[in-house]
Image 1: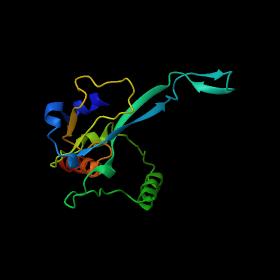
Image 2: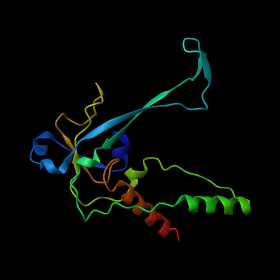
Image 3: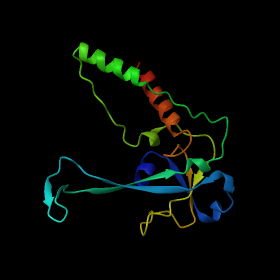
Amino acid sequence: EINTWVKYGVVIVIPPHIAKNIFKEEIIESRAIWTKRSDQQKPSKLNPLVGAWETLGDEVKCRIVGKDFQERYDEKVRRASPTSSSFMHNVICSVCAFEKLNLVVADATGAFLQGKKITRNLYFRLPKNTGDLGVTGVSPGSLLKCEKAIYGANDAARQWYLALKEILESLG
């Protein structure tokens, strides 16, 4: 997760001796969300202990999210990002079916991390629920300054929408 953040220029590490001078109101806590993902393409086997089929090669993933309820409310920060209604989804599917068009769905990897840069000061602490896993290059007591909105920041969805809008407009 941190490697992805570095790849997209999401955070800057603030060392402990500088972090102690940052206002507490600008710091939000974070937490690690652990998920176990199974690739359905991998072979399965019957587990005799539970009498059920298991997918081989389960993979544990971790996503770090900010606790947005701790973020200080700022009325100048826009949070809304446009989404389509279920009616619009139905219209698109109907047009594709009528015109015999292929409908393709895509997933943007690390979408929120590819959003526009934020202009406010937003710092967060690394989560405490990562067990013995440390983050290479981050000393205990350090803070991470967000250059872009992270998962859980109030305006993460909007920043991603603005970046996507900019790309689509540049393509015409």
